[in-house]
Length: 130
Image (cartoon, rainbow, N blue to C red; front, side, top):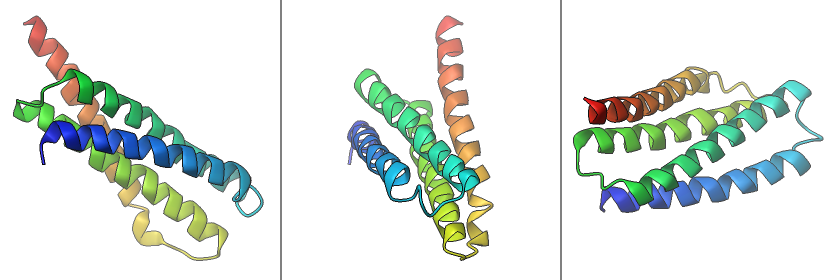
């Protein structure tokens, strides 16, 4: 499948799921999560939506013809998945008394991938100036 289509589909799916998870967190989980857990869950939703929008913007503005553009896109896609979904798992698991400690290191790995994606984007702007 072509990278541009993967980016656009990922952006649309992440956006759709961010709205679903946001509503789920605000209504269904509000009674079962602690304030701290709900705040963490909300952070996952926000980062997911921010990056869904970013993926859509990139998907309609870049051709993904260079390795850097492709790496940027895949860093964002994998980063959102690892960062946000690990937070969802940790929050919901903790509220049910289940310790999903294996997800603990996944969240910062996802964050690192998001940072790398933003770094690639920043570098692409700088490279165009030079």
